[in-house]
Image 1 (spheres, protein in one colour):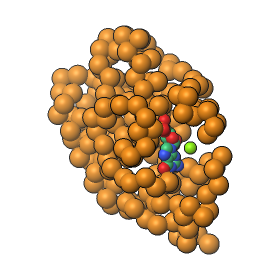
Image 2: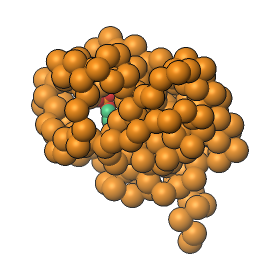
Image 3: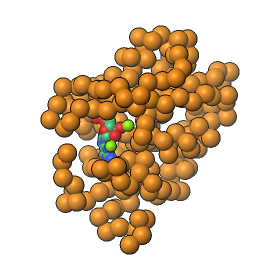
Image 4: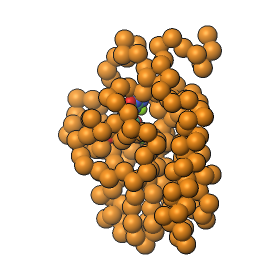
Length: 183
Ligand code: 5GP
Ligand code: MG
Ligand code: MG
């Protein structure tokens, strides 16, 4: 069966909807940062497809960097511990920074990154996220640029994985919970 049509997936946002929304977010960022050169920090791995499209929808001289973090296992996730797997190559001091995320769920990852980036004396830090799942929030975080707000469902595609699969789907879909085991 094709990777692109699977019975356990229910499409939430198709390619056309996602691309149209990313163009709107890019236009908003272009307006808000007029005259500036923001640094886009793409959070690996899930935000890569969104970041690649978003950066091309921004008509400003942006720069790009990447960071990788991981939450500890499910059992300890609520402790808020986040581990830095790959740091930035560049200094944040004095830079307007936009964190690019795939999804904001509990908010633990973002609150960790926001704290760290402020300690590093970024001039400003805002967040762009393809998806926002506010029902599960444990930390209050401001997301300035949201693609789509979604209900409390486990989604895959457009960067989002289940056990490292589905990241390449050109759409966002709900994965049938029967096909999901916690881990
Ligand atoms: P948070 O720290 O906000 O709880 O979650 C951040 C990370 O959890 C996301 O970047 C993503 O990797 C993962 N995550 C949260 N919700 C989902 C979801 O519905 N689907 C997938 N595939 N990952 C999710
Ligand atoms: Mg992420
Ligand atoms: Mg994942």
